[in-house]
Length: 449
Image (cartoon, rainbow, N blue to C red; front, side):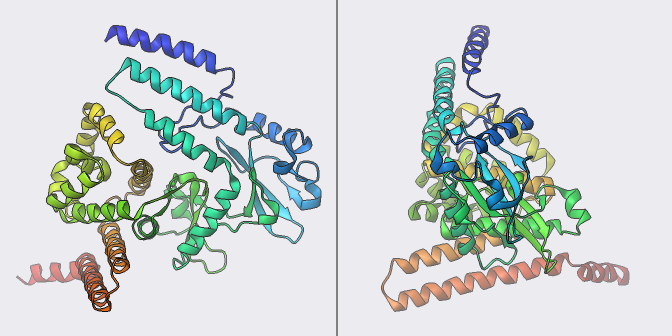
């Protein structure tokens, strides 16, 4: 072990010293499985100056930075030099158009395109080094995912199209707000969109101050993502708190969720999505044969118990009992954290076995679970009911698409309606059970006896 540690320290010194010339003071974000990239720059002021320089000079490319570089006044009444937010790929500036509309202008860092290939090269070196030091850990899939997803995130036109697609797809949710894109002011490296304000989804103090119901937010977030994952198979894969805002609608005063940063989406293949639906239905009900069957179909093999625990962040005891019926406890969380360290080699093996689509879903699940934990709404019964509804609808739609028989389609629709009705009755019973009136009646009956 001492020899390995010496290798690690020596290698780290060499790699980081050599890569420091072009890493731009970025930090490695190991939580981002989608585009393992080097994170935020150290100084916002320095980067702001870099952007302003890019606006003044057209040397980097006329197509991407067009007249915005030298003619901001022709496009905007005002353009704030200090960014509203800074990320690893871009900064967002607030501006006002001549017709009075307030917009957010997302500008890609002028050197990101050239740096991205170098970033991936450094990642590949680091991953191979880790594999050399610890043969049990094989993370080449990180490099593969980075190479596939980096170009998508660097294309802001792709991000704009994703935003419009998800807005249309989930238009039946009145609580969801996706910024409108201004295509005439957008290119591959500059995206101009509707400016929307709000507090981060994990900011309980903001919600308390603005009278926003935490449970409502958590429930609506679950509805939104269950619909994306199970019904449509088109999933926003970066729901960290900076990309999910909450607010009161200025007009209606109703609570809204604002979904930002649409650069990275995962498109789930139909067969994969159906297996994933049925796996979650089995996990919710505690159907162990179903858990094993669909985990194996998703590539977990004999590691299906570990896969179930990783997917739900629950202990195997909770999985066997049905995660919807066993509340999360602090002791269980401690057990999971302890076991995570003990089973790192097996987890590494598992991540190499499952389809690449699963990696972004695991990341998405973790981010959503972190939000629920902060809001203290984790593993609520409503979230499982909403997931079940989406799974039932998705499976029924898939079955209908596979048959031409009207009779079979009718049977599938009736079975779907019955299942959804049962879920609604169950939800009503849970509400009655937890209502204040029920507690009062229970207390009254105890008093009378």
